[in-house]
Length: 265
Image 1: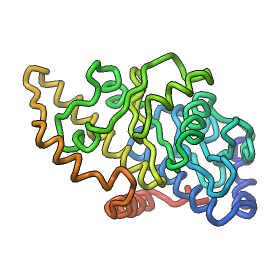
Image 2: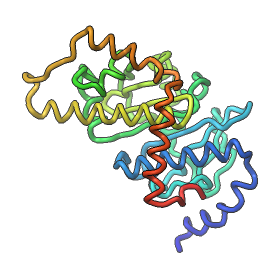
Image 3: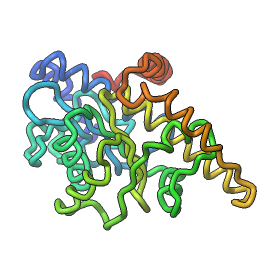
Image 4: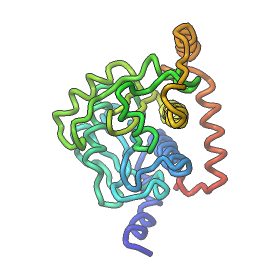
């Protein structure tokens, strides 16, 4: 057993004992989101990061231990940190990704309505982020996001705290952000909501890259009337009130549990 595995095993039984039931529930959901991302091959090895706000008055959030693969994340080994960067609880003692802290703390501080923030560097998501026109209205999937996606220009690896103000300004009141030349980010009123948004956005990018492979001269953009109609039809997804979000999450968990349930540990 590696030293990392030994430390993880030692803390699994104690983390649940020292956190509230509400925090444990969020930990399990966030760990599930990491495992689902691994299942769908959305990972960038040990890089990128998902976070979730810890229930309660403190501005604490949970994020992955830097160095773990997404399929190694469990409810117990998530790191708890505050928005100022103070580590509150780090079961493995390996710290967190600085870029993850810069991005996630900025959004959690500025947008208390967003309980979860998910960020990926997938091939197709990064490819769309590198296109001048960004997400195009090429598919039904894309139209769910097309009218509300925000963009943040690339400034280098997100290690500098002064980028936070611009990141938050560009996100505005949206919960969908394409970080140009970088990747995708979604937020939600719950882990389930943020994951539903990311799942659809990733799919929209998959379709766009596939469609463009046939040649840009052949691309058919949806008509403006259809864009507006879908915007109205999907309005309930914006605030997480659509019951389909929970239905989608429940199906995801059934799918994930067939692969294993150790993420709950």
